[in-house]
Image (cartoon, rainbow, N blue to C red; front, side, top):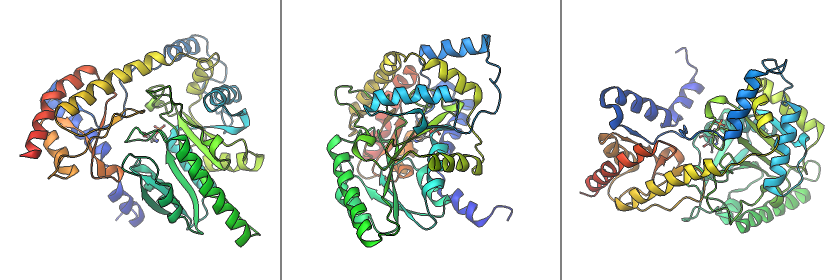
Length: 405
Ligand code: PLP
């Protein structure tokens, strides 16, 4: 076969999300607007006003290097502007040197993993999780260790402790979480930090020549899409010094196709060797940098902060309406604190795939929970037009009745 055995195996593990999205597009050709596609987090909500204004200004008066190769780490002023935002969001002083631009959060995760994972090491991933993580880690020839969360989707810190061994190098978290919308509590993150500090102390005693902490890699791509602002998202950096954060403007700013995101190194870890190594990984993996024009636009947009409230209000409206529809259909579904997904439990007596099939027969496209390593639920991305949400109500009710019949 032209395709290598390794890649064939990867294909087998690929998430169904894209396939479902493509199938729903096909279905649209025959069933038009009757199709309700909740498969992909491809937002119909508009980016913040400040972004659109900055885009217009950059196109009317482009800087001379608007289409050039930029430094691998990114446009210095943009890194500075992001560092200022992060300092505010995390309440921890973050400098420009901590921030490196990347082609979206996916690239950022791959760059960090490539930089810090020795061959054959292990990465703990709490589930449910974004399914692509598994493929990223395995692509680095490392082992994934899945640790299910508690029933309320908090991290199971004791189970994580039990899963750590000498080969454990990274814990890959997604906070807030896709698909559950969970925001991990301050207590959970502090408890996890204590466990990891104990592990590091133990390693210092047992391998004094080359002790390594377990690093936390926190994917915070949904940080701004947080509905209950009265309970802030606790900072990973404040909890644990040996951390990396990744994010992108795909979700917060509704720019998934623009491929722009970043890595932020914990201020306690940043040094020139690490920055050089991350830049080197950016090139080895073929990313080179991230799109130049977008960097200029976001640099301008973030100059004086921005008002995120209108975007959040749009998402909240959709979350609340679709949640009400799911409850009305008789499904059990926690109200997500953050992100753009609802993750209702599958009715008793059917599997996640069977329930997704029943919904698909009604032209409603959702992703089975097994794509997120949790087959007890299905995922609906609610960043769609309101009329799609409204139209789905009788269809979801019918499919749920059929599942129970
Ligand atoms: N991380 C999580 C948790 C996601 O849900 C997604 C996309 O849905 C990504 C990363 C990918 O982000 P990006 O498009 O910025 O690469």
